Image (tube, rainbow, N blue to C red):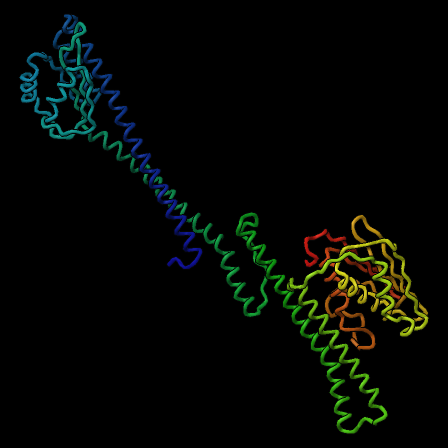
Length: 478
């Protein structure tokens, strides 16, 4: 019954509301009942005071007995009560009270009540049975005095049925109102619970669809400002990210398959040709050189893929050390042997010789090799590649500019994406696997830097990146 969030919310809200309304209604009923009896006590007290004045006036000879009885009847009519005025003697109180009880036959509590009244105490009972009236009554007793001395008691008996009837009428109105509010609230709580759980049910359904690989539209939240709304927003963000990851995964697999299939097919073809004797012996050294180059390209590709996987999984570590950028760049540029590979192509460098930075020297070399290799590859001789280093307040900004073919403006936003190449034929002679810039970007960001590109087709390309000077650590391993 309570398996769904909707049923739990609905039941929980209803239980809380019903208990609250019931407690409130019961409290109101109890308070109203107390108020009614309190007002009745005050009214009977006023009636008793009026009777006491009339008794004193009678004792002083100001009015006759008939006038006293008429006055008492009038007060009793107004108070809806039967009134007895008793004259008692404290010395013979027990005997007189017994005679009074036999004459009135009103209550078994009369003797102790008269004892309290003769001691000056007022007595009020909300409910007691009157034998004389043969019904339940409200009892009020008070003493009357003459010349400062208690001479007797004034007793009032008022039927409780009318009071109870009024109280029951009020109870009925209170509980009917509570029932109406409950019915209205049940509808509101039902709609609210349905709205609240709708987003959760939608997320449950969407999660199942995502798990099965089906496309899922964004979920609309009932209120984007509350916790469930923020959860829905987070779910939509996660869903979009999962879609992006799935797209990247498919592209990654497609790119890897293409990049590995091409050299493997070439290698297999040449090996079979050699085995079948289709390749002349004089051409075998050249074929083996091609096989060697393709093998090295696959090793380089798998190395780049492994580096990217480590970076994305957070297992790649930086080994920080202080080094002079000028010396590091001079070594990297010299290791490329540009003059041998492309005579007429020059690589120049502008860098402060005293600029020292704390970073991972191997990662820096990997970044620069990727950028310089691209610049050299896409720049024909005669041409120029310029490496320029600027000193920053904390760190350095390095740029690599070439006078090559440049990149079209509509392709610039994608050059740092994995497996993206401006050459759609993806021939090995015109570029690598399309991982170099993506890896360079990941390595720069691992250092906490930023990377960007500026290019114009037919003019050249400039790629820059910043390398913050890392804080000194207790260990060089980060």
